[in-house]
Every structure is written in C-alpha cells, then in structure tokens.
Length: 101
Image (cartoon, rainbow, N blue to C red; front, side, top):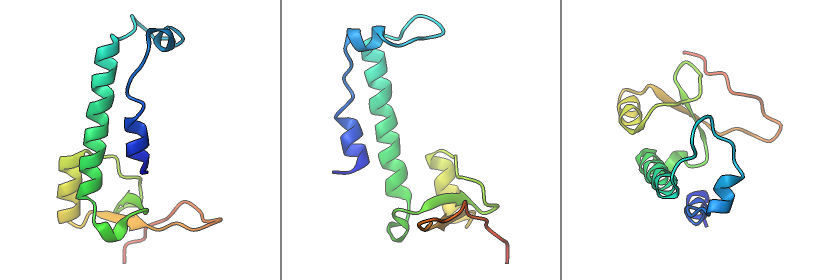
C-alpha cells in the first residue's frame, strides 16, 4: 500500500477528534475538512503521475538546489524546461548540493 492510499483511508473525522484540536478561529466543518483533504490527495496523485517514473523515490529539487515547492502546472513547466533535478540520497547522506556544470 502506498503512502497516498494509506492517507486516503484517514479522510473521515469525528466531532470528538475536531474538538481536541486548537484553531485560531472557529473550527472548520467536518465536511469542509474532509473535502480539503480529498482535494489535497487528488493533487498529490496528479503531481506524482507527472514525475518521470525513472525518478521514483528521489528528492525533487530546483536546479539551484532548493527543495521543489511548485504546483502541478509549475512542475510540468519545470520538467519541460529542465529546471527540475532529482537526488537519490543515501544512508548517512547529507542534504544535496546541486552544482551547475
């Protein structure tokens, strides 16, 4: 089971769970919260589908070495423009540094 499949199984919340949390304002409605969670999972699946299969399990970085934080449209553009790089990582590895060559 993938992480997203497992996360998708936990999209239902109870009033008791919601009451145990602190919010800056009024707590969201349970249906609103579940809807947002399902939307986030859908977006995550679309992002994963857009990534090259050969890069599965690798860290997605911007060419200048920062973690990639763009949305789906930005990711597709970045992949097409060769602005996205991947780092495999390693046991006892360090945060990657991407050097222009």
